Image 1 (cartoon, rainbow, N blue to C red):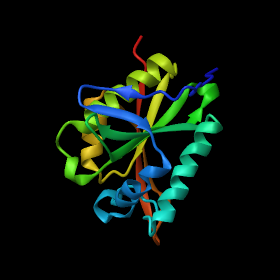
Image 2: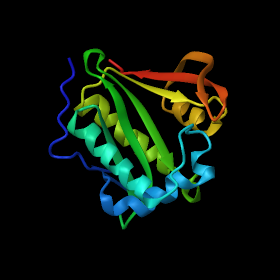
Image 3: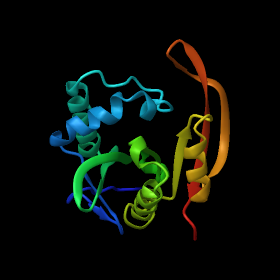
Length: 183
């Protein structure tokens, strides 16, 4: 069975990026991410309305970490601490050695390879350090950019659920992608 240990907090470093703990001081940047319609288009979650909403989200991230139910990294450039996005493992299924991955990136940084760099680092951590057996992603089927990213990273579609999620007065479809640790 999976026994996560996030102490000390695992900071991940790539060629261009620093994936680090999200702090209360990131609330302004997190608010920008979570309040912008372009970036929230496929998240199917309420947009942040105030900086306090972002501060509450930082606390939710901390609570998940303390309970060993998930870990969220802030995506920053090595030479700039501004939060460009987030990437996480959440819904950890300890008994199944499985987790869901989630991510978002400020639209100014799309199509620059940043999310590819971040997902590579996080998957490496998940399989080699956390010892996950598999990772899943729940994707809005209209989010073709996210699907392409997942497929580029060898995720395969496991399921397609018709109208299984009710949000903003309508039922939405979900596509489930997964990646099993290579032997």
